Length: 168
Image (cartoon, rainbow, N blue to C red):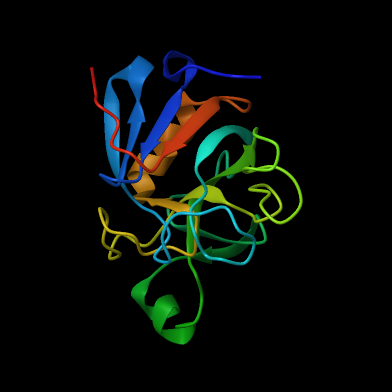
C-alpha cells in the first residue's frame, strides 16, 4: 500500500527535529536518535517511512509520570529521582507506540519499528530539544506530548522523513 503526505496525521522531520500536525497547524520541537537515522534492530537509530500509532499509554497519567515497559511506576519525575537513577532513559507522561507499515523497511525481521519499541514519548524538560539525543524514539516536551496524545487517535498515519519537509 502506498500513501501520500496529505494522508499523514503526523509528519516527523528529522532534518529539522520537528513534529508537525498538518490538520491542526501545530508543530513541536523533538529529539530523535543520537545514533542517527536507520531501521536496523539494536541500532539506537530513528526509523524512517510510514508508520501508524499502534497503541497509546498514559491516558489519565499526571504530567511527568514515569513509565517502564509501558507501565506507570507510581513515580513522578523529579531532579531527585534523576539523581537516584542516573542510568534510566526517562519515558514520561504519555507513550504513542509506533508500528511500521512498510515490509522490509520498518516492518519485519531485523527492522521492525514495533518490535524495536520505538515510541513518541515525553522526556524530562531539562533535556534539550531540536538535537538528536534519544535511543531511537521521538522525545517531546511533556506538555507537548500530552497535547499530541489528546489530538491523535490510535491508527493515525505517521510519516518520518530524513529529508526536510516543506510546510505549506
